[in-house]
Image (tube, rainbow, N blue to C red):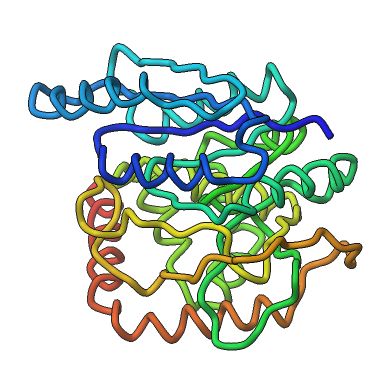
Length: 303
């Protein structure tokens, strides 16, 4: 099996990065994997000290087959950093595993990712592999498909990434014209369409919402594990793009997740469980969501 290179995107959170690296080093296949580390440039003088600490730490990392560090001179921002970095690596290798500096992985993460990448390499309908799954109440299948794509520990091939549409406005118009906004929002249980509108109007620069929309509109599938192989530790208020919350916390899988032969179609039951989960957390975030929606409507009105 030819292993996919890992692309890790880092900025200024040393404590988070150390935990991410420690977990990744403990992965089966780590010693046989190439690790690309993309270090974004400092946004301002205040951030410069932390970025320098990150770059000093990066130079001490070992226990991978090869480590390639790319230090950006200027601050690209998360979206541009990921889009350019993924494109660079995937054009060279044809496939990629992607992590950010606040994602702690199960030791079986790389094995699952590489086995799934190999198994579905020639299935054009499968656009990506994902490592995180929400903490739903009912037990999920060992692996299953859902329409779209995701962003917390993922992998894809060049044929998948080639479908990424940069233009959020184009994606939004197509979703609206095809009357797919309700389905895109998991039957109204989450605010994905509002996040896309926020990207279009400049409130955020999210690459992830464009990745999801690109895959969704092409009717592509992403493979998910029944138990999470990724835990996002960055939802502690320190990061630039996330609020403090623990509603997404999942227990990491402590066993290998086998790649089985399953139907090449969306698992409606699993999707329903995730929809129920979204509805269960929405009651605690209604005020936040309402504020986002009002801000988007105000900006569009004044544009």
